[in-house]
Length: 192
Image (tube, rainbow, N blue to C red; front, side, top):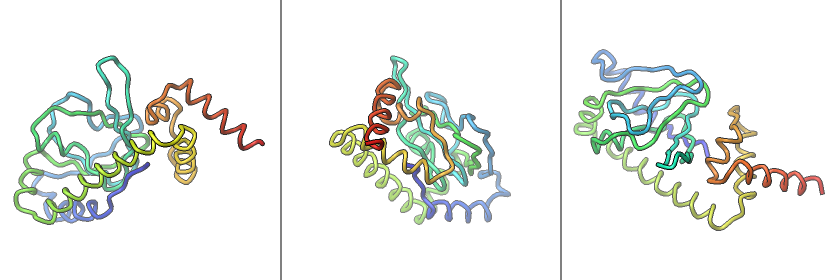
């Protein structure tokens, strides 16, 4: 649930140590609930999370929001929109304190043109995202909400990140009311 990409983080840390004087890459700090990116805004930067957890949200035209994923250490944000020169597809919000490497669009594109290792890792990251999205969609179709809820709750207990009921329901693609019913069923199962 909290995606990490430590290999990508290592490459970006090397770039930062080598190129930070060029002003194309910098560290940025975000407080809880700050937005790193907002849906439909211009894509001017790419972010790589150094520490913390962010939620990636897609808001539909009808106002309903769906949490696509929770991303953590080493995950890349905003690269698709920068590469395609399009407005942001999603909003990304810090769940707690987040520190991220912030690359300008020009710097990121320049690095892609000259660094084959970065290109290779970007392709791996894209493939990983497609795989994870497919697995999540399959799991949600094949299993009851309670099964997914058990996985999410176990992961939440093993981390220091607290996810609100509203965020949990948006991640599972159900209403808060349905989430409460599922939580009640799980409590009843544990009690019997």
